[in-house]
Each structure stands twice: as C-alpha cells, then as structure tokens.
Amino acid sequence: MNNGQEKKLYRSEQNKVFAGVCGGLAAYFGWDATVLRILWVVVTIFSVGAGIVAYLIFWLVMPLRRDAAAWGQGQDGYGPNGYGQGGYANPYGPR
Image 1 (spheres, rainbow, N blue to C red):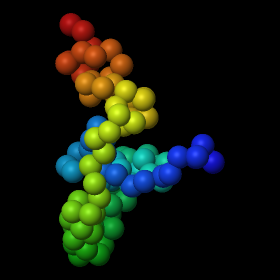
Image 2: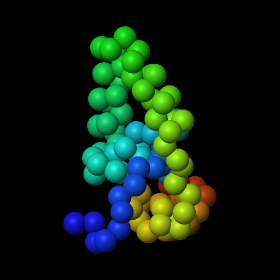
Image 3: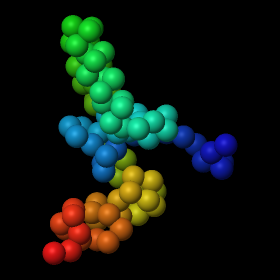
C-alpha cells in the first residue's frame, strides 16, 4: 500500500532532536516520534546504556534524507525552508 514507491529508512532532517534517528524511525514505521523517543530513553535506562550504542550505530548507518521528496511535501509538516508552510523564520509565525 505504498503506491509503488519503495519504503526506505532515512534520518529525519526536520523531525530531529539530536541526529534525526528517532524521527526517521518513526516516519518509517508510521509512529509518533515523541512516543518513540520516550520508549528509547526507557529502554536505554533499563538496558544500562545499550540504547546509546544502538543510537550511535543507527546514526552512522542511516543516511540523512536530503532529496526533494522530503522537502515541501508536508510529510513532516515543514516546507522547503524548514519553517512550515508559511515560510517564516520565526517558528511561531509572523510578528
């Protein structure tokens, strides 16, 4: 059900806190990135830091998405300049 497009795993350029790993994984699986980040922290705490190692491996292995399909399509809620559909540099809109 992906309309003939191949689904690929990328780090997110727009939906990122540190390196875009959780944002990219969330986009790939269709999950909420915030929930995935919280789960990642919980797993990291209970696995005595194994989540940090896994995050670093994902960071090194996953390519950063920088093509036209990631920009301006509304999949992340950001336009081509990274500031939403309005295009303002202020993330809260015009002053």
